[in-house]
Length: 202
Image 1 (tube, helix red, strand yellow):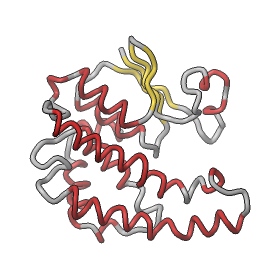
Image 2: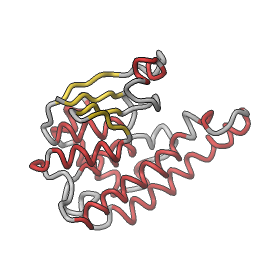
Image 3: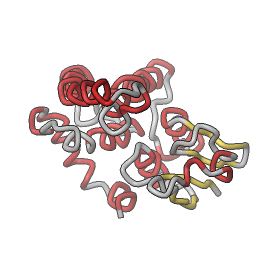
């Protein structure tokens, strides 16, 4: 049995979707960010970073969304949630790395600007830049990553699709109209039709 520590509205949703797609036996534990639960000694013992997601496995606890998605895909290979060949798997990891290191950081400058600056005027300047940065990021996703098929990896659905779906759901709050990106918008609509996504959102 796996245990996923999650908070609604975060990238933990991508892992929830992967677990549902894999039909992986798991339980959910909600971390209440508003109450500061992520900073309690109890949670820091699980994830010293004080963030979600964290996935407790029989071997130990894993953190960081790209790692969790790769774990679920490889732990449940019968679900076919990742390419088996090295090049295909690396392409998936390339996309995950871009979402984690660039897109997520661009988004986080709006709700968590205090991570990067203490001065209110500096935080406000970063926040004003978020819509442009997110637009630039999604233009790359639109033209480079959704150019070959209905899914991130072309014809093969993978855990990368749940990750994209999750990050794309932040566009509205970041002041960006998803309609600017027809392929991303169509991808979101396809994802909403998947039973595993519907269960993860329920």
